[in-house]
Length: 292
Image 1 (cartoon, rainbow, N blue to C red):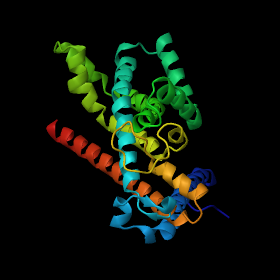
Image 2 (cartoon, rainbow, N blue to C red; image 1 turned 180 degrees about the horizontal axis):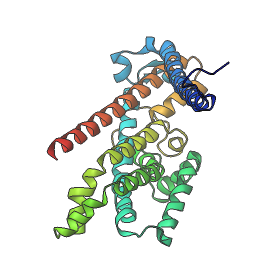
Image 3 (tube, one colour; image 1 turned 180 degrees about the vertical axis):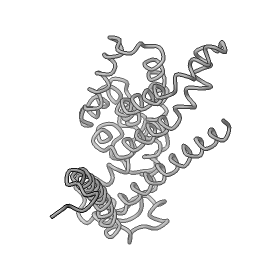
């Protein structure tokens, strides 16, 4: 029997393989979405009943079983602020050095890259022990918000440097050539052309740094401490939200509902920060496109 006109068994094999590949991609994407939805739904089901304005503003009571998380939210915000204030200038300066002043493939550049890879793979508990020994004991800061923030700054540096360097390297070489043709200095080129072009990557790195700082637990137990009262200065001990969730879940009988509510607040906080960063970066890109 003659085959239908235009039919080729060999030609149908790539089409079937492409459909199977697309099906696998969709299945994996749906699996990730499902896991995230399941996690969020489980936490919400356990903790949404505890959410209220009083929960967000009042101090904890009865070892955290009742009361709120007001002082803990403030301590968390201060720890993250200290970490970003310390890490961002160092990360940006290092990224500029590596991307604009160090030749590609140089020995120094490879050494810094390997050092960043090693730092990013160090367990958080090791950073906690280092922060306790150096910031808390050697520098005399004790268990304090500033010690916890500086420890988190050390942890966030690899992410911030890598994303900032990648953003600067992704800037078109036409910018550099045009600036050189106009006689602009390297500093002017960096400030007026390269850094604006790398803004989306810088914002992404900043959000990753904030996410890691807010979700960290082990390092803060050894540096910022457990105290759940309202801090009066950066040198007071302060309990981070992640540490509070861990303590309620592991050490406080009957604290699971409050821990779930605190976890829900943490997830919502991260969601707002990420959405705001995405909105600002998208708006900045649209403005730059309209200007050009």
